Length: 295
Picture 1: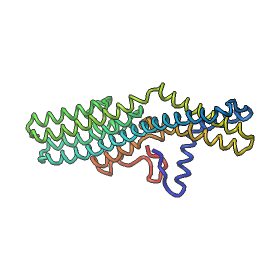
Picture 2: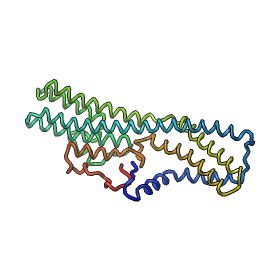
Picture 3: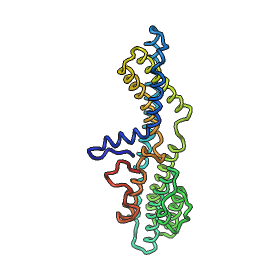
Picture 4: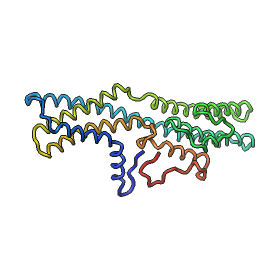
């Protein structure tokens, strides 16, 4: 996640975004250089009508696509928030059913450690990266190859074991399973967002539309005058539509292991600190509070 921090924050953010757009900006400059010597091919009486209709269409489609992309980003953010909330609630629930028995304390400790491992494992699976070695070491009792879904299943089996041994009453079992089920739902929602992106053919259509309209506008403005001002104005208008489409593309994949991602590892550090204490190595954020990018 790109953040604006300090007096130079806006400049750093602009630099990050421009770097991500470097190939698109280069393509815009090349396209403008190619079109400058080409005369406007649209007849004067048809130019306004054609560009007006095309501009309205481009604005509607790009606006709808960007709204959809932002909704995907916001939903993923909300689901991660629910994971943090339910992990804290699980910690509270385990404390509430703790009777002080040594056998019970061992299971509760394992469930807390496993819940932290689940958060890290889920974040890494969503990003398509290998989890840090310290993540698997959180629960040496569980296989290292266990995924996020398997870890939640093991949580459910621990709850069943506590209930079978009469160390957990029905009310406590229902409470813990409700939290486990909520975590399953949040995980499934995040996987749906990751696995079901905006259809590629629709994404391609919006990009082509933005470029086509931008090129038409540039050719029209440049054809009306040979001044530097008209070239700059045409390039600016073309850039607005192309960059707006690209920014929507960046946020429609909120878990793609880029600087536009949600700060999922930051969420995992928060969960670690809540369940295992702020002194745990995984509870310390990887980036300082002054960092421009949080991952």
